[in-house]
Structures are given as C-alpha cells and as structure tokens.
Image 1: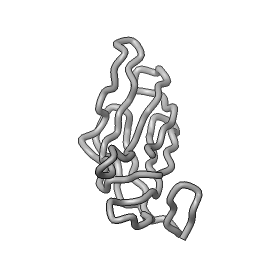
Image 2: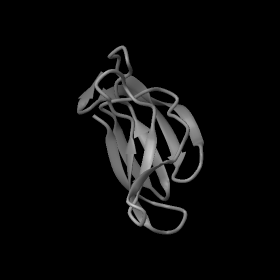
Image 3: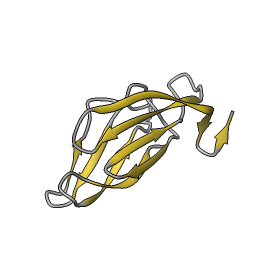
Length: 106
C-alpha cells in the first residue's frame, strides 16, 4: 500500500498527496498530489530515495513526511524522507529509532 496525507500547497489550498506504494510488481518511488481543479494527479518530486510500500505519510506545514515502510526486498525501513509539495526532496534518510512497516516496529 501507498501512504496518503492531506497537505497545504504553496497556493494555500489543501490537497491529497499519495506517496510510494506497490504496483503489483515492485515498490514505487513516486510522490503525487491530486489537482482537483484539473482532475488529475501531478508528480511533486522526481522520486523517493528509496522505493517504499506500507509506509506512514504525514502532511505538516506544507511538507510531506514519508516514514518507514518496506523496500523491494521486504526489509523494513528506518528512515524518513521529507518533501515540499511543489519542489524536490527537502531532506532524505533521516534516521529514526526503529524501523516501521504499516503498524509493525522492529
């Protein structure tokens, strides 16, 4: 599964953001925001540093935090990636105290 959050964009409008996920073959590195005016999904970054599925996603003050999850090998991730809603990666691989996947902790 992918992670979703509601986050305020640069235009001051709140929107839904979808991050990572699984396409049936591999985990995804994408992060997209739903554009309700044009009824389409817009890429908000080139890619996550790590493909992530079963991750947590939080929107806070215009930033999107991708927390933990599972990589393509099935390993639980112990890092956080931070994005703005309209720009590239703000910070990557922020370590956390324990790896998470869904509601599991290691």
